[in-house]
View 1: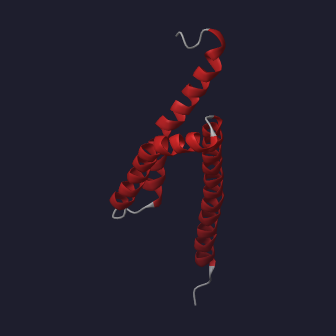
View 2: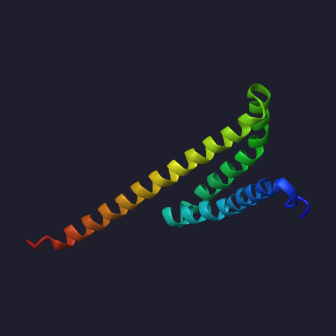
View 3: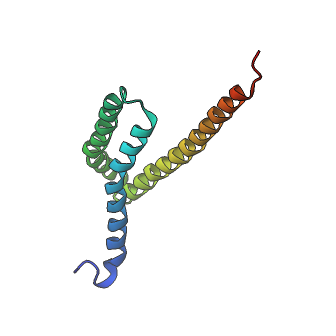
Length: 118
């Protein structure tokens, strides 16, 4: 609780929010993989998703250290903001196109059933 005392409360709040995002990421990735793959393809895509999360956790500190060495410590925050921003846009695009694909698939199925029998 010493971190909350004084002027460091904002750093504590930011670290809690980032931590919550980090905890939620594997659950979100697993949910999306489960919903978008067949039972036969699930193990392969779960492996790919898990490996990508692990690769990010392993390479993140090294890349952040290199960025700090090249551009200074404040560049780490900018790099993190850029990565979170890219993730936000990717999620928004996925939601938009995923919903659009679902709507198109549903309307195609409805149109197919609406055709008169010949």
